[in-house]
Length: 166
Image (cartoon, rainbow, N blue to C red):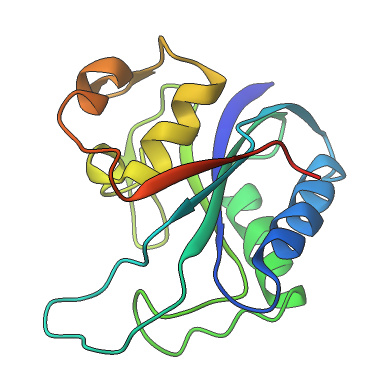
C-alpha cells in the first residue's frame, strides 16, 4: 500500500459541497482507505499573467489516502470523479467545479506526459502547503524539501482555515 496526498479545489457550483462529495468518493475508491483530511481552506484564485477575468475564491483541502492503485490508475480515477462532478477544462487555471491533483505518492519522483510527482508548483502554493501542514507538519517533500521550510517562504495572507468538512 502507498501513502498518497490528494489536493482538492473548487470555486463553482457550491464548492464546499463539491469537496465533501469528492472526499466521499475518494474514500470509496477500490483498494483505497482514507487516512486523514486537512479540513477546508479558502484561498484566492490563481490567474495567469495578463488574465483580467475575475474568479470567486477557491475552497481547498488535502486528503491523505492509503492505496494499492498505481499512480496512473489513481490519476484516471481522479479524472473520472472530476468529470462526474461537472469538471470542464476550458482554460488553464480557470474556474472549476472540482480539481483533484495527486500531490505526493509515497516518495516517488516522476515526470511523464500525464503526471508529475511531486505535483508541479507544490512548493509555492499556499492552498496546498497549509492544508498539508494540518495533516503532517513534519512532511518531507521528495526533491523539494521539508514542509516547514517551504511554509517559512510563503505568506498566509491569501488563505483562511474554514474548519472541518461538514
